[in-house]
Length: 284
Image 1 (tube, rainbow, N blue to C red):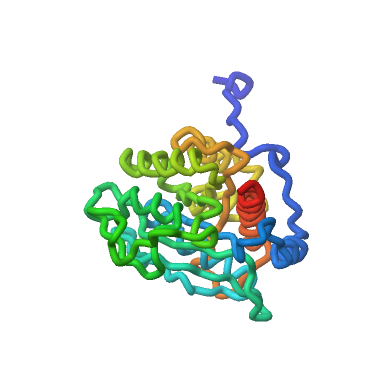
Image 2 (cartoon, rainbow, N blue to C red; image 1 turned 90 degrees about the vertical axis):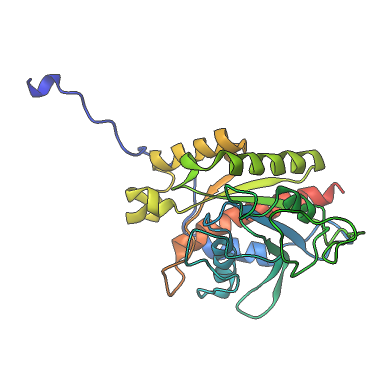
């Protein structure tokens, strides 16, 4: 068959980015978030609950957010060396400090990861308990039974500061097509409860460099990549979160130093999270 009759190979990326990013705006983004003002007199900090499947990168995202403001790679939230079980067992809060040791007006909460069996991952009821502010710091989760009123780790009358102001679902770009139905159901159940409560939701898509060679070679190609956009559509379809609430990031996990492009993607996700949380508390 002659060359004129051969089928041309479809392009692997777009000719121009489908979402604009100012890759030179890292310092401005950081400064805006450092100076963030909460639109509610009784709330001292915005509380961000991070949940997702085991090995999706929940703790790594918290570490990456802290690294951005510290200007060095940190590991405060820990990180699993094995994907078989959740590294996080307890309910942990993480304040974020900048490089001048000033605290920022938001807190991340890390919880046990979701798994395919109820006896090994967090119970959906405890994610909902956390959203409602019922879980005490350092409570150890029981996968078989969620917290109940009267249990030692249960907060009976949570304040506005105990409650969650934005729900962040973390999904790995590598595993989104093969996530267990039980994990997807749990994420959807929590999402529906958050919707009923009016709590905003953002999805963080991790491991983007590992699923796309174009992005692995150059992180600035993230919004040129058809592969990444397909993964984001998969998240939208499987979990139900709209595209404008999905943010691809590369977490710090091998690096010894921070870099501009990784910081920018994390900061863009944080800006969306904090603006959404602030809109929510303004209406309380």
